[in-house]
Image 1: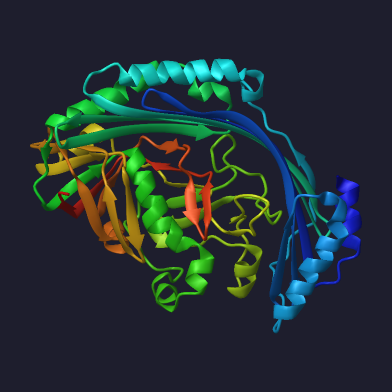
Image 2: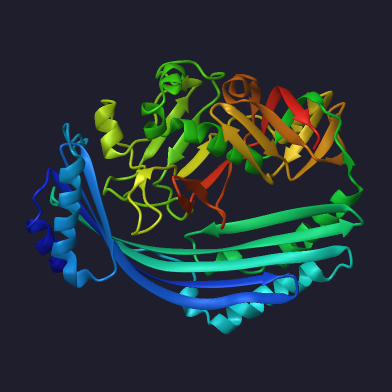
Length: 453
């Protein structure tokens, strides 16, 4: 493989050319209700060539590596048609590396029969209650190897082993339908999906309990968000605004996202770190061969950096951060997050809770949407807080607001960092789901607008 790729690069006539080739095997199992909806294993091989001439890019995806020199020529020809300026790429050291993944239990060592039996058991636990209308259990593992080379002289081989599962229970009482969800997924191997019987029972109970929960009364509240919802907020509401391709192309965001500007109290720090081994967003190198790193987006309340590809780093005269990622060989890399989280501080959850007279404890996320700096998130479950104590469960809790105002309204950051992966992943630019993790500690936020559904 190395010789084929390097030989093809010798014929490249461009300012810059890179080749990625990818091979892998995936296993998927899905139960919906009582039905085994899909089960199977598949293998795939493919690759792509990306070339730059005078700032223009050409991109060719392929499945037959035998014609690689022709694909290199095609990508260069495309770039030649569109290039009119100057190719700008931040410089990188030449890298030669082979990255192997270690998993406690390799999913490839577990039979498809055993994987199916495990999923069936989990599904039956969820369906065991008469109040559960339907379920969804989805399992996925993927073993992949990516070969990368460029005309700078780098050659990198990276192996990944991803494994995860999602559990969903949907409860119904007449027209009242409620759901609860749990998902895990990272690069630690098959052990993270085993022994989840208790999680299945917990998901089932949460869905059923939501049937009797009262809708929340809309208004402004002090809200404590759990680590999972904190992670969703950090990723969706702030992380995407920190992706340099978005900032570079958006004048309004360039005026807002000025490095050195204060975005919160001194205790607030938000990080993207693609070098966290085992987490879903881990890679030693991104899809351009840039080493991943720990990047402080906000440090001690101050905006300090953003996420870059080689091209955005050069255009904005900043350093590449290892955040150019492609979902697969058929896509060109774009600026993406990896493992994004808020750093913990010294508040215990109980202390945080004790200082709230009237508020809401919001747990998990059923999804949401962002529009520039505005966000809307639906909590998976929630409890009222009165006089420093958790009270009745409430539902239909929707948090809305401006991300920059919300960051400034954070007044307590917990000591209990948790980082979550999963099967959902991240979507951007038609590339979804990209494996990522996000998280944080418990966080308390003043003056959050809460609207019932």
